[in-house]
Image (cartoon, rainbow, N blue to C red):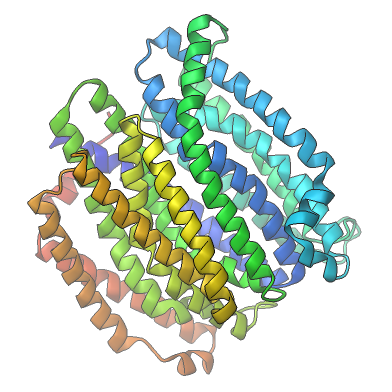
Amino acid sequence: MDNKYQFFKHISNISIFTILSRIFGFTRDILMANLFGNSVAADAFLFAYRFPAMLRTLLIEEGFQAAFIPLYVGLKPNEAKQFTGIVLIAMLVLCFVLLTPSLIFMPELMGLMASDFKQRGNSFELLVLLARILFCYFFFLLVCAVFVNLLQSHKKFIATASLPLFVSAALIISMGLIALFPTHSLILAPQNEVVWLAIAVIIAGFMQMLFIISTSMRASLMPSFAITPKMLNLLGKFFKKMLPVMLGKSSVQITFLINQILIIGTGAGALATFYYAERMLHLPIGIFIIAITTVLLPYLSHQLQQEQTQARINAQHYAMTAALLLTMPAMIAFIILAPLIMLTLFWHGAFTAAAATDSAKVLMILATGLPAIALIKIQTTILFAHHDTRTPFFITIIGAFFNVLLAIFLIKKYSFFGAALASTLSLNGQAIIMIYILIKRRLYLFQAIMMRNIAKIVTACTAMSAILLILSPSQAVILNNGFSYRFFWLIALILLGGITYIGVILLLRVFSLTEIKMLLKKRDA
């Protein structure tokens, strides 16, 4: 039972810390919606920021983790430090190769990908400037990636979970200064106030890098640099494992980029409207799903290395149970409460009621793919732990292909709502295919207790749905009342729905009160 509590304790530690990050993130998004609404300037910033985010997804997140951690945990301490060092050198070289031509040819790159901005006054010049500034953020992301995975290999998760706080805090401060001193000469110096947001991201990136390096130094986990034949061989294995994930993720990012281009084509402000709904979905993804998969890969890698079969099976079961336990009620809440959520949080300043209502519709559609996102990430992590990065690559490619086809067809018929529907359909299809492959290969055993837990979770979600549907005010009532009314009902319904769900879960004994108390008391090893 100790492994169970330690596993969930790591998840809870990351989740609790990430909640603070998400609070900062939502504060940032609310301020941005208030100051810039769904304007062309907001579209330009969000589109430009997509590129360092895209490179981070390709080179840093799952691919880097899947290649680095399984190799690192199998090395002796001195070799592990040398391996970290040579990976850091390779990442810096890669950064130089990618950044230099991108910065030089940014106008051509943006002209190819976002030509619609050329028809919106001087917004194209603003887009190019923002993209050049934000591309530099990628340097800090790459350096951080090495130290983040180094710390996670030693099951040190708290510091890495705190990194998103830096960007959110920097953006909040910059927007606060813009709001307080809108006519100050320094604020008005750039061609658009939104340029200060890009500068804030760069400052945050520098602070992230200093923080994660200092954390590694305190843990005595700094890399050493020795270019030997063995290290070069390990570096080759690293990139060989990383390449399929990169290719798979590149298809996802290309799909996402195509969707954004199609969304931009539906009208000015459409991208910002879509973005705020998507950001809401990142709350359960960031707090729960990423926390689970971040903990799961090092656990499975160590257990496979030590041939602990039962511990591996248990860890997979815990992860699947936790993912469904957390994402199913989130899905239901988003579907039922979407209008109340978006109108309460974002209907302020430059962001209109119509824009908030459209965002709510997007959120309702995207929410139906939330459990699929959780399952895909866990299933992918299981395959990564078994040194299989090719299967997720092929499944991702197929999913991305169908996503693009569906998006092209559905956007013509349903505007940018079609992009949300295409994404949801594709994600659910990928989740079904991947779980079938895992079961067929006997990499995941679908135990009877899992079926019972799913039935219990569905029962709890049904009870919660009944409470929310009975008590939720209609959209007309929401629109005709002020912020205080909306805020009261949002908090009240979240509390009532949460209490109902947790009560049924405890009643049906998915977790007992004794287990929860032991989990909260258990400290990290």
